[in-house]
Image (cartoon, rainbow, N blue to C red; front, side, top):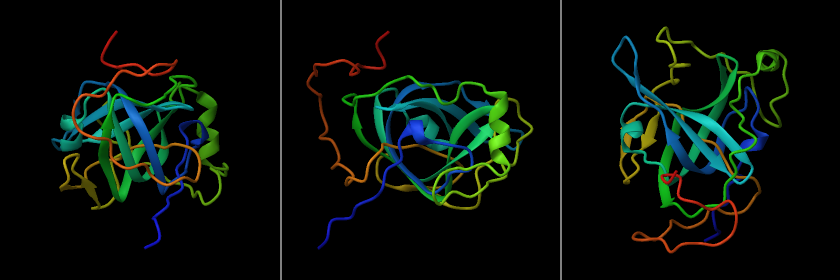
Amino acid sequence: MQELRLELTAVRDLKPTMKNLNMIFIVLEIGRPNVTKDGHEVRSCKVADKTGSINLSVWDEPGLLLQPGDILRISKGYVSVWKNCLTLYMGKGGDIQKIGEFCMVFSELPFMSEPNPDIATQMVGGTGGPGSQPISPVVNSTPGVGPRPPGNGRQQNLNGGTWPSAAPAPGAMGGNGSIPAPFPRGPVPPTKGGGKRDPRKR
């Protein structure tokens, strides 16, 4: 059987209106949840790969299970602009899966979610890269929440199952290589070299 190969998108290559993104990254920080008027919990997580970092908006149960240091793989992610900040979301039918912990080379710079008033102009007639199409975000009235996740897709449980999708999700690593096999469970030996650290340690 031929090995399944997916094109991964790097964080630094993300632009407004990009969609159908496959990405792998590590969770650095998880913000406090905001509760929408219809009862959904929304968290903003800072995630990174070796090319940069970005904010990921996670809705409901997936946000409860995420921990700093988790290495995640997402599919069908998309990028939109929330309050002049580039933000990563999970699209309809996409999933998010934990594939490892701690040991991943990453860079916090550039931070792609840095506020940029000019970024909104890229939403209209902007070039989001090959295959990208404009996405019109539906802004929720709850402060700090961002666009509501689209459709009735499903998100994959970090432990294997699936949830009804209430959430947008993750970003990517560059290149056209195959997705690495899941990391082994249990303690991860310390690694040497710059850029590798435990995000839980200050």
